[in-house]
Image (cartoon, rainbow, N blue to C red; front, side, top):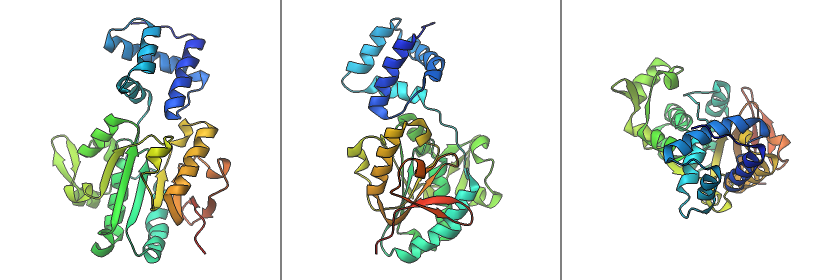
Length: 276
Protein backbone atom coordinates (compact mmCIF):
# COMPACT_ATOMS: atom_id res chain seq x y z
CA UNK A 1 0.00 0.00 0.00
CA UNK A 2 1.05 3.64 -0.37
CA UNK A 3 0.27 5.76 2.69
CA UNK A 4 1.37 9.37 2.33
CA UNK A 5 2.35 10.82 5.68
CA UNK A 6 1.80 14.56 6.03
CA UNK A 7 4.20 16.58 8.17
CA UNK A 8 1.44 17.08 10.74
CA UNK A 9 0.70 13.34 10.90
CA UNK A 10 4.40 12.53 11.09
CA UNK A 11 4.94 14.91 14.00
CA UNK A 12 1.93 13.54 15.87
CA UNK A 13 3.24 9.99 15.47
CA UNK A 14 6.84 11.04 16.16
CA UNK A 15 5.87 12.84 19.38
CA UNK A 16 3.87 9.84 20.60
CA UNK A 17 6.84 7.50 20.02
CA UNK A 18 9.13 9.97 21.77
CA UNK A 19 6.76 10.15 24.75
CA UNK A 20 6.77 6.37 25.07
CA UNK A 21 10.39 5.52 24.29
CA UNK A 22 12.58 8.64 24.30
CA UNK A 23 13.59 7.87 20.70
CA UNK A 24 13.38 11.05 18.67
CA UNK A 25 12.96 11.29 14.90
CA UNK A 26 13.75 14.64 13.25
CA UNK A 27 11.61 15.95 10.39
CA UNK A 28 14.20 14.56 7.95
CA UNK A 29 13.06 11.05 8.94
CA UNK A 30 9.51 11.56 7.58
CA UNK A 31 10.00 9.35 4.52
CA UNK A 32 11.85 6.70 6.53
CA UNK A 33 8.93 6.49 8.94
CA UNK A 34 6.42 6.57 6.08
CA UNK A 35 8.01 3.48 4.49
CA UNK A 36 7.99 1.57 7.78
CA UNK A 37 4.44 2.68 8.45
CA UNK A 38 3.30 1.35 5.06
CA UNK A 39 4.92 -2.01 5.80
CA UNK A 40 3.19 -2.31 9.15
CA UNK A 41 -0.25 -1.18 7.99
CA UNK A 42 -0.11 -3.53 5.00
CA UNK A 43 0.74 -6.45 7.29
CA UNK A 44 -2.33 -5.63 9.40
CA UNK A 45 -4.58 -4.95 6.39
CA UNK A 46 -5.26 -1.41 7.65
CA UNK A 47 -5.63 1.40 5.12
CA UNK A 48 -6.50 4.37 7.29
CA UNK A 49 -3.71 6.28 9.05
CA UNK A 50 -5.99 7.60 11.78
CA UNK A 51 -7.24 4.09 12.52
CA UNK A 52 -3.67 2.83 12.88
CA UNK A 53 -2.68 5.76 15.09
CA UNK A 54 -5.70 5.07 17.33
CA UNK A 55 -4.62 1.45 17.60
CA UNK A 56 -1.14 2.52 18.71
CA UNK A 57 -2.42 5.03 21.22
CA UNK A 58 -5.29 3.18 22.84
CA UNK A 59 -4.53 -0.55 22.70
CA UNK A 60 -4.32 -2.05 26.15
CA UNK A 61 -1.29 -4.33 25.90
CA UNK A 62 1.08 -2.12 23.90
CA UNK A 63 1.85 -4.97 21.50
CA UNK A 64 1.42 -2.99 18.30
CA UNK A 65 3.51 -0.09 19.60
CA UNK A 66 6.26 -2.59 20.38
CA UNK A 67 6.01 -4.08 16.89
CA UNK A 68 6.23 -0.64 15.24
CA UNK A 69 9.21 0.41 17.38
CA UNK A 70 11.02 -2.77 16.40
CA UNK A 71 10.46 -1.90 12.75
CA UNK A 72 11.83 1.62 13.26
CA UNK A 73 15.00 0.80 15.17
CA UNK A 74 18.17 -0.07 13.26
CA UNK A 75 20.29 -2.90 14.67
CA UNK A 76 23.66 -3.17 12.89
CA UNK A 77 26.50 -4.48 15.00
CA UNK A 78 29.24 -7.10 15.10
CA UNK A 79 31.72 -8.74 17.50
CA UNK A 80 34.60 -6.57 18.77
CA UNK A 81 33.15 -3.37 17.33
CA UNK A 82 35.19 -0.24 18.21
CA UNK A 83 38.18 -2.36 19.18
CA UNK A 84 40.23 0.35 20.94
CA UNK A 85 37.52 0.82 23.54
CA UNK A 86 37.40 -2.91 24.18
CA UNK A 87 41.19 -2.98 24.50
CA UNK A 88 40.88 -0.19 27.08
CA UNK A 89 38.26 -2.19 28.96
CA UNK A 90 40.30 -5.41 28.89
CA UNK A 91 43.77 -4.05 29.67
CA UNK A 92 43.17 -0.90 31.71
CA UNK A 93 39.69 -0.76 33.27
CA UNK A 94 39.03 -4.40 34.09
CA UNK A 95 42.25 -5.02 36.08
CA UNK A 96 41.57 -1.90 38.15
CA UNK A 97 38.01 -2.98 38.96
CA UNK A 98 39.03 -6.52 39.85
CA UNK A 99 41.67 -5.20 42.25
CA UNK A 100 39.29 -2.69 43.83
CA UNK A 101 36.06 -4.67 44.14
CA UNK A 102 35.92 -7.79 46.28
CA UNK A 103 32.26 -8.72 45.74
CA UNK A 104 30.17 -9.50 42.64
CA UNK A 105 31.06 -7.71 39.42
CA UNK A 106 28.29 -6.52 37.08
CA UNK A 107 28.69 -5.29 33.51
CA UNK A 108 25.77 -3.76 31.62
CA UNK A 109 25.36 -3.72 27.84
CA UNK A 110 22.59 -1.11 27.45
CA UNK A 111 20.99 -1.16 24.02
CA UNK A 112 22.54 -4.55 23.35
CA UNK A 113 20.79 -5.13 20.01
CA UNK A 114 21.39 -8.68 18.71
CA UNK A 115 23.90 -9.52 21.46
CA UNK A 116 27.30 -9.21 19.80
CA UNK A 117 28.53 -6.62 22.30
CA UNK A 118 27.38 -8.62 25.33
CA UNK A 119 29.04 -11.81 24.10
CA UNK A 120 32.18 -9.83 23.21
CA UNK A 121 32.35 -8.69 26.84
CA UNK A 122 31.88 -12.31 27.92
CA UNK A 123 34.82 -13.37 25.74
CA UNK A 124 37.00 -10.61 27.21
CA UNK A 125 36.11 -11.59 30.78
CA UNK A 126 36.83 -15.25 29.99
CA UNK A 127 40.19 -14.39 28.45
CA UNK A 128 41.34 -11.89 31.07
CA UNK A 129 40.13 -13.42 34.34
CA UNK A 130 40.89 -16.62 36.15
CA UNK A 131 38.06 -18.99 37.20
CA UNK A 132 37.69 -17.43 40.66
CA UNK A 133 37.17 -13.89 39.38
CA UNK A 134 35.09 -15.02 36.39
CA UNK A 135 32.71 -16.78 38.78
CA UNK A 136 31.75 -13.46 40.35
CA UNK A 137 30.98 -11.75 37.02
CA UNK A 138 27.58 -11.14 35.46
CA UNK A 139 26.69 -9.35 32.23
CA UNK A 140 23.23 -7.80 31.97
CA UNK A 141 22.21 -7.01 28.38
CA UNK A 142 19.11 -4.91 27.73
CA UNK A 143 17.20 -3.62 24.74
CA UNK A 144 13.74 -2.26 23.99
CA UNK A 145 13.31 -4.60 21.00
CA UNK A 146 11.98 -8.08 21.83
CA UNK A 147 12.92 -9.48 18.43
CA UNK A 148 16.61 -8.66 18.74
CA UNK A 149 16.61 -10.03 22.29
CA UNK A 150 15.17 -13.32 21.07
CA UNK A 151 17.89 -13.41 18.40
CA UNK A 152 20.57 -12.65 21.00
CA UNK A 153 19.40 -15.42 23.33
CA UNK A 154 19.81 -17.97 20.52
CA UNK A 155 23.40 -16.82 20.04
CA UNK A 156 23.67 -17.83 16.37
CA UNK A 157 25.66 -15.56 14.04
CA UNK A 158 26.80 -15.43 10.44
CA UNK A 159 29.96 -14.22 8.74
CA UNK A 160 28.97 -10.54 8.88
CA UNK A 161 28.84 -10.50 12.68
CA UNK A 162 31.89 -12.69 13.29
CA UNK A 163 34.24 -11.31 10.63
CA UNK A 164 36.56 -9.61 13.14
CA UNK A 165 36.84 -12.53 15.56
CA UNK A 166 40.33 -14.10 15.83
CA UNK A 167 40.48 -17.78 14.89
CA UNK A 168 41.35 -18.95 18.46
CA UNK A 169 38.19 -17.23 19.80
CA UNK A 170 36.06 -18.85 17.12
CA UNK A 171 37.41 -22.24 18.15
CA UNK A 172 37.10 -21.68 21.92
CA UNK A 173 33.75 -19.95 22.17
CA UNK A 174 31.68 -21.05 19.16
CA UNK A 175 30.38 -24.25 17.62
CA UNK A 176 29.06 -24.95 14.13
CA UNK A 177 25.31 -24.71 13.71
CA UNK A 178 24.47 -25.25 10.05
CA UNK A 179 25.65 -22.20 8.11
CA UNK A 180 26.09 -20.19 11.32
CA UNK A 181 28.25 -20.17 14.42
CA UNK A 182 26.58 -20.69 17.79
CA UNK A 183 27.93 -19.24 21.04
CA UNK A 184 28.84 -22.07 23.39
CA UNK A 185 26.74 -22.56 26.51
CA UNK A 186 29.52 -21.70 28.96
CA UNK A 187 29.80 -18.23 27.39
CA UNK A 188 26.04 -17.76 27.12
CA UNK A 189 25.70 -18.50 30.84
CA UNK A 190 27.55 -15.26 31.65
CA UNK A 191 24.88 -13.10 29.96
CA UNK A 192 21.34 -12.30 31.08
CA UNK A 193 19.18 -10.68 28.38
CA UNK A 194 16.15 -8.64 29.39
CA UNK A 195 13.84 -6.07 27.83
CA UNK A 196 14.26 -2.52 29.11
CA UNK A 197 13.15 0.96 28.07
CA UNK A 198 16.01 3.29 29.01
CA UNK A 199 13.68 6.22 29.69
CA UNK A 200 11.46 4.26 32.07
CA UNK A 201 12.80 5.18 35.54
CA UNK A 202 11.07 2.23 37.21
CA UNK A 203 12.75 -0.24 34.87
CA UNK A 204 16.09 1.53 35.20
CA UNK A 205 15.93 1.20 38.98
CA UNK A 206 15.96 -2.58 38.60
CA UNK A 207 19.68 -2.54 37.81
CA UNK A 208 22.00 -1.40 40.58
CA UNK A 209 25.62 -1.76 41.70
CA UNK A 210 27.00 -1.88 38.17
CA UNK A 211 30.76 -1.69 37.63
CA UNK A 212 30.84 -0.81 33.93
CA UNK A 213 28.13 0.33 31.52
CA UNK A 214 28.48 0.02 27.76
CA UNK A 215 25.93 2.25 26.01
CA UNK A 216 27.51 2.78 22.63
CA UNK A 217 25.73 4.39 19.68
CA UNK A 218 22.40 4.37 21.51
CA UNK A 219 21.97 7.90 22.88
CA UNK A 220 22.34 9.33 19.37
CA UNK A 221 18.70 8.34 18.85
CA UNK A 222 17.54 10.43 21.85
CA UNK A 223 17.06 14.15 22.24
CA UNK A 224 18.94 16.22 24.86
CA UNK A 225 16.31 15.86 27.58
CA UNK A 226 16.10 12.07 27.23
CA UNK A 227 19.90 11.76 27.14
CA UNK A 228 20.16 13.66 30.43
CA UNK A 229 17.52 11.45 32.02
CA UNK A 230 19.31 8.28 30.92
CA UNK A 231 22.66 9.65 32.15
CA UNK A 232 21.17 10.46 35.56
CA UNK A 233 19.70 6.97 35.82
CA UNK A 234 23.06 5.47 34.84
CA UNK A 235 24.63 7.52 37.62
CA UNK A 236 22.24 5.95 40.14
CA UNK A 237 22.85 2.45 38.78
CA UNK A 238 26.63 2.51 38.75
CA UNK A 239 28.98 2.06 41.69
CA UNK A 240 31.27 4.86 42.82
CA UNK A 241 34.38 4.55 40.66
CA UNK A 242 32.47 2.73 37.92
CA UNK A 243 32.87 3.54 34.22
CA UNK A 244 30.60 4.35 31.25
CA UNK A 245 31.62 3.65 27.65
CA UNK A 246 29.82 5.64 24.95
CA UNK A 247 30.24 5.47 21.17
CA UNK A 248 33.05 7.40 19.48
CA UNK A 249 30.65 10.05 18.20
CA UNK A 250 29.00 10.53 21.60
CA UNK A 251 30.10 12.74 24.50
CA UNK A 252 28.85 12.53 28.07
CA UNK A 253 30.35 15.98 28.69
CA UNK A 254 27.81 17.49 26.29
CA UNK A 255 24.98 15.79 28.20
CA UNK A 256 25.89 16.30 31.85
CA UNK A 257 28.87 17.11 34.09
CA UNK A 258 28.13 14.48 36.74
CA UNK A 259 30.59 11.99 35.19
CA UNK A 260 34.31 12.67 35.10
CA UNK A 261 36.10 12.35 31.75
CA UNK A 262 39.01 9.89 31.91
CA UNK A 263 41.72 9.65 29.27
CA UNK A 264 43.19 6.17 29.08
CA UNK A 265 45.86 5.01 26.68
CA UNK A 266 43.35 3.38 24.33
CA UNK A 267 40.13 5.37 24.81
CA UNK A 268 38.32 8.24 26.46
CA UNK A 269 35.58 7.07 28.85
CA UNK A 270 33.58 8.44 31.78
CA UNK A 271 33.71 7.66 35.48
CA UNK A 272 31.46 8.18 38.47
CA UNK A 273 33.62 9.91 41.07
CA UNK A 274 35.21 7.29 43.36
CA UNK A 275 34.12 7.28 47.00
CA UNK A 276 36.51 9.04 49.37
